[in-house]
Length: 419
Image (cartoon, rainbow, N blue to C red):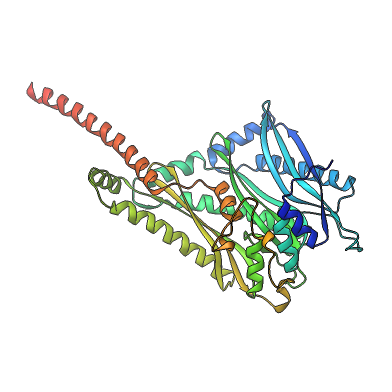
């Protein structure tokens, strides 16, 4: 009896590349932060920035779980593991790191050569697309940063929220953290001889007490036609990457930007008054528009710095950090024209490599699927109406308190002058 984590479409696509499904393989590691580590973390929480000790501990735990999962697959004679995920769970006050994937075996009736053992984040259908484009998987890699905004940075940033516009301290903090996680992902891929990381998955994980972890995972791969000494990065799905190669382009670098904007007290009060009636809230409309435009401008600047021709697959995500404070996150792949050797092996993708289990064909197949699902783990999306209601509700409370205080002071003043 074999228990596999692959769907029927995944099994079909992998069979076309001479790979057969095996058992689910698991690796885990239960660890404790320790009292000393907690004290160091508390100090960094006050100052703000990366909590290096926590980053190291979590990284070690995740890697230990991944190594044990790979060892389990190799012990069973597998040639690789697909669909690897890395999870963090709390267990009896301790932290359990869990890695899980599905082992793969070579179909010896089709492939007689030895293939080096590999692990990858890609699903079976995405792995088919990677292989068809010439990306040979090597290892599941990750880059993470555990950080805290800090009291000092948070205080300055909160003061800026009284004014309308970008809160630079917050924008810089979130932007630096994501780029640092990407840098560590690239360094880990370089150490295993890869020149590309595909299928990058980005998550922001709350750890409690105002501490968060930004985690980037992906598949370190090698492509003979990509430049040596560089690591291309992409968050595109497998079928999107295949379509990109078919059009004569290759990924250059994942680009990301953050724009944190404050509505401001004056604009907030104006919107509150207008919200009593019906119609457009001009101040809210304008500030959200400016935040998006600022984020796109930063993405464009980063793409120009790396000499990209364009940015594709860009998704803008908006979330409310606090009442009256919004964050816009931009994420896309900078691309350039590719040599002819990057063209896919197949003339067309098989339908099983595009459709997900239980899904129906869509007009735009390459814009449907796992990328929006992966980005939903990065940030929660706010509907515009919910966002306005939240901001207006908070401002209403503030205005009500202000009116009450004004009334109290007015009564005291009347009594004092009456005497």
